[in-house]
Length: 135
Image (cartoon, rainbow, N blue to C red; front, side):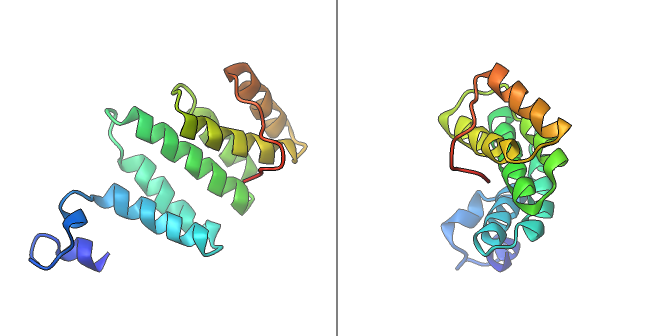
C-alpha cells in the first residue's frame, strides 16, 4: 500500500504500481488476510473490490463475487455467501466454476433453507459441489 500511495511521485516505485488500482490493492489485501487465517478481516476488502469494479468488468466481478462467497463461507456468513455466489453466475470460466463448486461443497455441509436453495440453483446452473473441497 505504501508503494501504491507513492506510485505517482516516486521514481523508484515498482512497475506494477503504474497499472494497479485500488481494486487490485483491495483484492491483494484480502488475499493476504485469507492466507493468514483471517477471513473476517478480508471481507471488507473483497466487498470494496467488488463494489469498485465497473459494469465493463463483468467477468472479473463474477470471479470476485465468487471469491467473496468463499471467504464469507469460511467466516460463517452462510446466507450472505450463498447470495454472493448466486450473483456470480452467468459467466463461464474454469476458475469461476471451480470457486462456485467450492462454495457449493461448503453449503452442502450446512442444513438450512438458504444452503439447500443455493445448492439446487448451482445444480441447475450446471455446477455440482466438489466433494471434499469446502471453502
